[in-house]
Amino acid sequence: MAARAGDAAGAASALEEAGRLAPRWPLPLLKLGNVQAHLQGDAVAAEASYLRSIQLEPTHDGYYFLGKLQAASGCDAAAADSYESALCCDPTSPASRVELHRACVAAGLSPEESDLRLLRTCCRADPGDVRYAGYPNRNQAWTPSDRPELREA
Image (cartoon, rainbow, N blue to C red; front, side, top):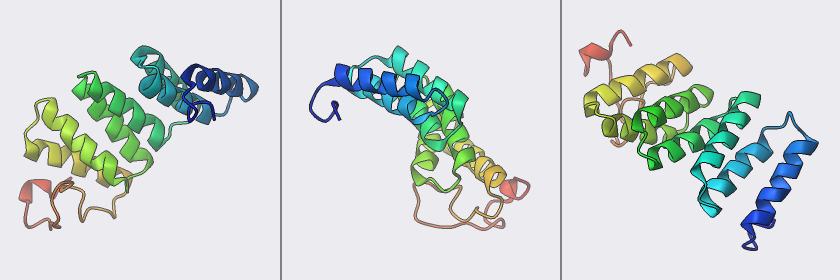
């Protein structure tokens, strides 16, 4: 593809054309957002592409890349919301778990509040998957008796 050859404008043009040819397919928009964000440095255009991709089909990758863009722009609360949405699409994503925790802490939540938000998100998305949900940066599991305030999550 043109992006691999160093032609960001050519890659963007090809992805825009792919989007026009298949207007209900979100992947060209997602890839276009990546080209705009990482190769062209156009965060505004990238955000618009990610949002259009998500509008067509909410996916983990769409929300995850949007969150990365928002975090890089210092919009930590918005990034946390995007990572939470990414986890609702794929609750098994370790990267989204870690990024949600980081964004929450950067937005001003304590690590414990961040753990609780992460746990609630993962429990909502996949109620059976709570072993590591509250500990994205720790190599340990927890049980409800370890954290009484999380029993009702």
